[in-house]
Length: 168
Image 1 (cartoon, rainbow, N blue to C red):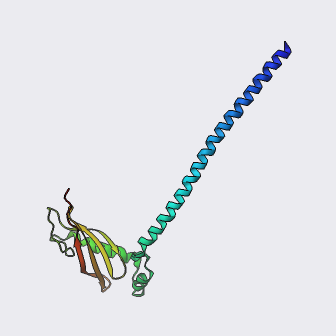
Image 2 (cartoon, one colour):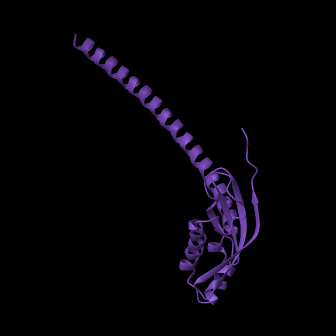
Image 3 (cartoon, rainbow, N blue to C red):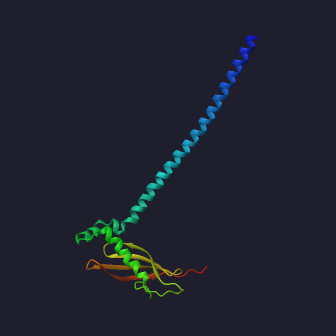
């Protein structure tokens, strides 16, 4: 009888060991599969990041904040570019407060709204690109600027265009 009990215990222990081995093997394979998928995603994300990094560098090329020659131009005249760049943008946006038509936008609004400058990009120490709209009609401006007496800006519209309205 004792030998049968030991035999049953041995068979039970053997079955338990086999069950645990199979279970551990399945769990291990699942985690290994997840790890491989995660590694593949990491590589894909690294490629995406490198691609986006290249695009960001391209977009930063025509931007005053990243144009060392243009910044040197201002710094040689004694300007603090950290204060000057926001000042220039603010002066353009202040023109939106004009009660009449916008002084830089050569188009009259065809809606109840007014033409306003929405976005400004300082290209260098002389040129600005700006986007304008009245809520329905959109366009862009190419503006030159110069600083007079360190406090006053003079803007000159060089070129502009308005996109044709889309009828759906």
